[in-house]
Amino acid sequence: MKSKVSRLDRFISQNSVFSLSDTRLLIAQKRIFLDGHAAYSIQQKVTEFTHVVLDGNCLKDNKPVYMMLNKPRGVVSATKDLKHSTVVDLVRHPQKNELHIVGRLDLNTTGLVLLTNDGAWSRKISLPETKLEKTYEVTLSKPLTDEYIVVFREGVYFGYENITTQPACLEILSEYTARLSLIEGKYHQVKRMFGFFQNEVLALHRVSVGHISLGGLEVGHCRQLTSSEVAIIQNH
Image 1 (cartoon, rainbow, N blue to C red):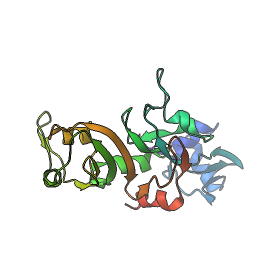
Image 2 (cartoon, one colour; image 1 turned 45 degrees about the vertical axis):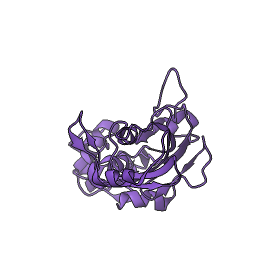
Image 3 (tube, rainbow, N blue to C red; image 1 turned 120 degrees about the horizontal axis):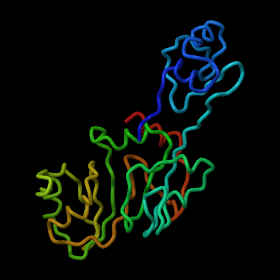
Image 4 (cartoon, one colour; image 1 turned 180 degrees about the vertical axis):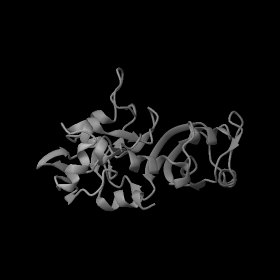
């Protein structure tokens, strides 16, 4: 999801009766305000959430929205789907139709899904170099052994892509359950990692992304992120 940024003169020409060349005079006459401050250059950046006022009229006043959802099984990580309910269908917010999904989960995978209309924020989560840890609770069809811990820590080789996964931390919770933390999000990665041992994943539940965790959020419910939760990602 790309962040929408434009130069001030271009924004003014696209959103008012004034032309690109008119913008210098409007600035000199202090008729344009960005986030409450008089504009000073035609090259100032107008982002998707910049508050823009021209001659007392608001041209742009988008608000950033950051949500978390505890996704149930059988719900699609999409904004629209003809066959299934989507995560957006479960969101209760007046700007829900502006939101996009950060880090999709498979149809039968449950747990934490983040949604936002802030492209820069969601990109930061998705970029590999951010190395943001995602943690999952996994239920397996066969018993776990300490060998899994060693192999996951060293990385699992995926022959199709000719790559080895980044080191991952596996904590065995019981004979058939574990908590897995990793910094990647390759296609069906968790299932494929356990597939190395021919051990089928019966249930997969994401509990956290970085320091943002589901906590006690009920299945199918959503809430807005706190300012500190948002800032953790921005400052990561």
